[in-house]
Length: 162
Length: 290
Ligand SMILES: Cc1cc2nc3c(=O)[nH]c(=O)nc-3n(C[C@H](O)[C@H](O)[C@H](O)COP(=O)(O)OP(=O)(O)OC[C@H]3O[C@@H](n4cnc5c(N)ncnc54)[C@H](O)[C@@H]3O)c2cc1C
Ligand code: FES
Ligand code: FES
Image (cartoon, rainbow over all chains, first blue to last red; front, top):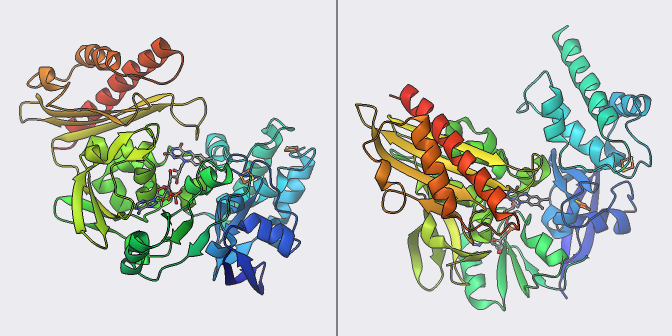
């Protein structure tokens, strides 16, 4: 077994660890750093529950090795700050979560969408549904989640204009 | 749901990676990992050695050549989807990339990885055969060689590369005046693999008649299926590109497909409709692109 030294910035803190080659970024975050907000559903890329931001882009932490994250900046749901507060509140108000298992993944993916200049603004319902299509929710039926992202995204837009 | 043990290396250069592929036990290049790590998590793949090539920034570049667009093997799907240069010079590739999986997958997955993975339902292999792309590969012992995209795809998830070969660059002929393209995909929902789909590259002559036609089909055989002037599309050369012509051609080519989906007749009907829709879009664009 190979042990690989890595240095990763997670939620603003630098961590130096030695990891097994086969350790996923998701297991590294959950088991090594005890950041259990990143959830594991399928472990093969389908459900999106494990989404985290790596250098500002959403990726599946189950499909990335901890070794691949060496030198990168990782943001987990625990690291989303004030920028995600309106979305959290809006999700709660609009019943965008029930059991909450999928919620960290949705917060990460939606945060990327809301910050991304490459996605067309103002957001449309179709656009939001497409952007969130890689995150599965078994409880809500998505309506509340989509509405929350639309509300926050298009509000921000008007605030930016002002 | 965890991969079996392997040894992880991160070579510093293409040369070092090639050397590793030639000398280390049962090695596999790791690019975006969006197919390989999936297979490894499911224990459907158990390479002894992973060579992480994901950071070769040199191979993440896209540039414009006189008559072609040149893409490094590590260009991400998201780049193909958003880069204005790709949109302008290889619009079919650009459109196809937007249909791949989900944002998180497109942020990581690479064109080289997608071509090497050789999934007949995948969008970029289809775009590569439809556009007549060339795949440049390199090995430590035999140096460089170039093969056509068609030569790369052998069967389901099987490519014609030697185990020590790495895809380095992909060249895609740039769209020319008089050419039009279309890409149509049917899936149960956005991001799912296609049930059926078609890419079309059409060339019209000065009189508006069909001078060239390449049609690629998604998920219609054990590899991306290509019909070109040598095989399949010759009968329509010299004709006027009209909806009735496309409809007939769609059904004729769909009949030649061999979808793996259990409901073959349904998928063939989708295929026919994807061909005629994509061909109509190509006709319109060719008319505008003079
Ligand atoms: C949930 C999910 C949905 C998806 N949906 C789609 C979809 O709709 N359409 C689609 O097309 N794809 C889809 N994919 C797959 C995705 O596009 C992958 O990115 C792609 O198939 C492989 O690219 P990669 O860079 O991730 O390669 P890897 O996973 O890193 O590698 C794949 C294979 O190629 C080899 N390889 C990688 N790079 C090279 C190289 N330069 N030279 C030689 N061999 C190389 C590897 O050794 C491995 O065998 C999906 C994946 C997931 C997890
Ligand atoms: S656990 Fe990673 S996508 Fe499902
Ligand atoms: S709230 Fe339960 S899975 Fe989404």
